[in-house]
Length: 350
Length: 209
Image (tube, rainbow over the protein chains, first blue to last red):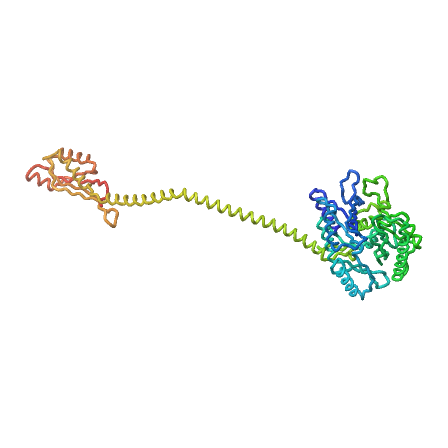
């Protein structure tokens, strides 16, 4: 659709002489207490006007807090609160620009489970029951994909249908074109190679409000599981010493996931690194601690493109470690770009 | 047009109904816009036509107001014309009913010519014949004729008389013929007066009705 739109707009602009619509690709990573937004768009090259011929680059980064305290039980009006915050604080769209975006929901809103094809109805009933009785009070919406190529085990991802629709609706009402609402693992694995130049075997998302692991199945998302939450309070970034026991647990769970995945698929590439991302992955020493516990190489998620947004505070020192916190938003934004649509800044470098 | 599915579509946690409702609402908006524009156009056309009709009605009314005296005038003229025609008819009737004096004129002409030669000319008989109009034919085919039987003293008097007769407007082509028989009788009889018969053509101003 996008390619067709681009072609038609190109013809239109050639016929009318009017400049084409500027297209932005956004990832909106809605977390429990923060919302992170990353933007990819066609970069300015010298004097040339912005066009779809120029490579796509990371042009903007934005985040705002959501007044929810993750350490206590979530408020009963969580959806209303989130919808209000989004409608008030999402960046406004420039008139005339197209803003294609992908969204991800807070980790606790998405439920993952392993099921077989025959038990799919049972899983649907369970998820329905779970979401009806939860805070979200809605029917469940299920997606499933294969956990391993050599088994009929399926990963079932479920979310509350009404909550998802309301969030997408408020984002769309702000002026964005919502392409899809993706599970974190799917977006991360889809964009990992293009954004980090790595071929990971799994991606671990470490946030103070929740963690998860996704194992790469061929090039797509395979087995996905939630990991035990971080026990350290989230009002500040914890030190590596405080995290040590929890990281040990994470490493064990990840290894278990690998074992499970290899049972479903057979051979797993032990050489491929495990990418870690999320705000906790930024903490110095986390990668080292995890690598000590696991038998696999660990890499922190880093954006390899040349262009990155200029920030006022640390414009001179590029802190690549901070990329890991925005990894989900960046991956979502990249997933909004249709393959073959335009040259990617990062790929050019490679 | 159904958009192509992206490779990430199988993982999309948004229900299809959301995308469909966005598409439907976009379609609805665009069609609503089109329909509103059309409605506005139709409304303008209707208003325009109503205004034009009103304007025309006003103009026609004004025209009618101005035309009313003209119409009256026309009717008056027609009435006058009819009256005139009737009067004309009356005139014609009157004209045709007037007695004709052509016969008298002819007689007067003869009388005038004869008066100067009183005593020298004795008219015995006078015969005048004029064209008469009948109901069926416009004119009679008979020729107007004039014949006078008279006795004259001598040829000189006769000649003078004939000249006088010729000079009369109502008479022409005067010829004379001596009546030999009566002439001889006259010579033998009472006096030496010449018996003469004069013929001519009387002129009528018009055919007698």
